[in-house]
Length: 329
Length: 284
Image (cartoon, rainbow over all chains, first blue to last red; front, side, top):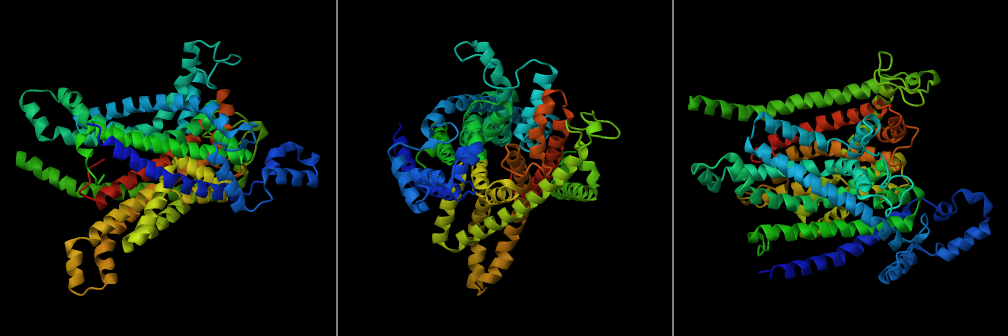
């Protein structure tokens, strides 16, 4: 039954074995060529207080006086033993910083993922039931408008309406000011999630709507659907009954493969809402010249995208058994 | 009656996509041109800080209002959009060139094909925005960083389409017959390959443009893009957060809306160009 899963996992493991090192080399070249002086980034405002000898001492301690290739070999050796270096800004190991902040981002991304899945497929199915109608055209136009709207702008508009205008929802952070996770009630935490999740879900809706719509139209025109219609089933019953599996399977695949993009969007959403997640750390690392943290985050997102794609492939095979033994895919 | 509706349907199906594409192209390019011309014609003084006109709501003198420092939002939005457009065009040109070069290389040589495959896989391995961010960081941010970052990351989608199309045509019977009849490779490329690829390239170029300007805005928003002293939608929106908190909604609404309209006009144009160039493809 699951004999197809093993070969798939092995194939993916092999792919990761060449993808991750190549990506690491590419990212290392990018980061080490940045015209950011790591010592300058480290000392920050105290730059006038340290002399050239101290700079040399820091450079020697960090191995900055070594050529790039030597530094790369050192970095790889450390990474192989689980040490991704220390973040300059957070003054803590990169792995700790990422692990501390990943849960908050994962919560945001997965809720936004779920919300856009429900909205996207729902609208797609409704549009497919009456292709060419006013409803269908409105939904498709809505999807295209969403693709052309920057998510962070939508976020600011949401703040302007619901936080400033109506004063219904908080505009910032994950918790009420001055409280800790233990103190805040479930509802207080939930309230802080609403706006960020809605803003972030915008990113994923459009492709889902168009994909689900195309799949569902394909099914509604197929002989099985015609057969059901001939027996008196209504369009809605077919679409939400037998058609659901035909449309949801591929939609799930598309949406899982797009989960990585949601993570990209969360960088902007977290900046708007001051959400204490990985996206915020990414922005701080990039603007503050924190090269080790940036490297760590980039590799972590690579893994995130990879897992998303793999889950997408597994989901596709679970839903459509024909794909399981298809070598061409 | 059924015959008449059938006739009507085929007639509209044949003419509509082309007419829609032409209408959308006229709209998109006149919008583009009027923004660039208006921004260039704008007097410098309209962009300056006016301490006596701070926090004004939209009105006759300032159609989009003024911000916390008393700068006219309409004038800044126009200049910013014009900057976005030039970055978008540069990015679309660069990414289209890369896509064409890589897909041609991939069609010519199986070794290069594998290499291009690996490069594509690497580029798609990171979330698109994270990759742009890393490249912009490597070039020190600013105008240079954002242009390079946005320009060299938008090619994979188009290069995949082109590679598939080129390989399908190259393996087709009529190309084999053409070659057997003694036509040179150049003649085949000109007469069989180009007519298939050129419309795809144009549609791809137009579709890259809106993505590029949206990514540029995002990068400027987090402070890694265009320098803050040059008007850009991203920087304006980043600065607008404080104003929005004190109820100045217009500081955020209009710049973003301008960006959405520009992006939208090209998204629509690109979609209809794709439909025109590929009649077998469904609407989605």
